[in-house]
Amino acid sequence: MYTTRIFSGVKPTGHLTLGNYLGAIRRWVDVDQHRSDALFCVVDLHALTVDHDPGRVRRLSRQAATLLLAAGLEPELCTLFVQSHVDEHARLSYLLECVATDGEMRRMIQYREKAGRERERGGGVRLSLLTYPALMAADILAYRADEVPVGEDQRQHVELSRDLAVRFNQRYGQTFTVPRATQPTVAARVMDLQDPKSKMGKSHDSGSGIVYLLDEPEVIEKKFLRGVTDSGFDVSYDQEARPGVSNLLEILASCEGTTPQELSGEFSSYAALKRRTADAVVQLLKPVQERHRELAADPGHVDAVLRKGAERARERAKPTVDAAYRAIGLLPPM
Ligand code: TYM
Image 1: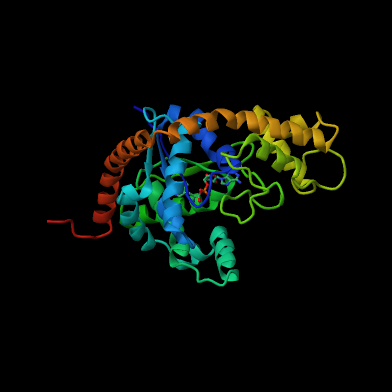
Image 2 (image 1 turned 60 degrees about the horizontal axis):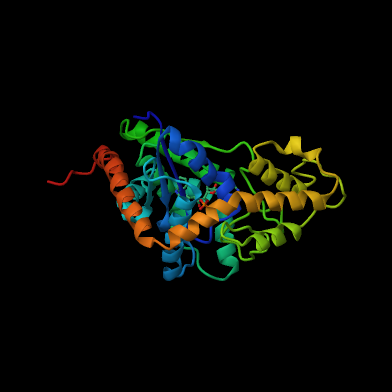
């Protein structure tokens, strides 16, 4: 029996990227599933917060689950499931909307950025984009997770989940565990190769600066070799002054298990750094891609894993969510 509970998730809004892998998934596989009662979730409800194509969300959800298994999540060690298969997430989300304020939702950086983009496109902003962090808090709090392994961009959402847990417990009695975010020491924020001041994000429009986990080796090489470089020749680690080089050093350090500072002395040219980083990423992703090919040919196996995963997740979430319903003042069913 483990004493630590871990929860994390990935949203099927696009193909999974190197940022998802280095920032989150690799740690789930290498560390988290071995040392805790760990739950990993394809958070499909979150994919409905922006303009979406129903068939694509379905395909991407299955693909994300397949890739997580290909990356090395083991159903005997952890619980892998799809969010919409477990009603407790949506049930709890509403209660947390009754604990959160609209001001704290509007302060979320991701909301401001994404709502801005949606408005620029001329579309309306879905209300669910604003309430998204309440659903994310529900994902975490329903399981009484202690730790939430995420990339840097999700820290603010996890902070909000902490605030909501504390507030609920103070108002209505001890119900939730207060979770904390954990981050990798390197590559917590992998940047776009074409625009190293922006995060490498799966739902961005242009794919040329984004490395997808299923990109062919030649495509990966091309993306690295054509990546934007900073002015000057010096290969030094300085995220402000040299974002392009620093991003490559972070990626390479993550692949090789070292630090960007240690690596920076090893290169006399940008080209050499790009080449070695591309090779390291190709090697890192090769076994994941091979395993993905095998698993994609056996969707029945993936379905069975998800079915079992949802059952296990439900068993864990229901008592806590029922307790929250009682604590907040709702009459239990007769
Ligand atoms: P999502 O799907 O955007 O990303 C999944 C995980 O990958 C990390 N990540 C990155 N890490 C480093 N560099 C990058 N460029 C990069 N891009 C993404 C993210 O930080 C994340 O850990 N809201 C979440 C999904 C979610 C969730 C949850 C996570 C919903 N409920 C509960 C944890 C717990 C999201 O959109 O992640």
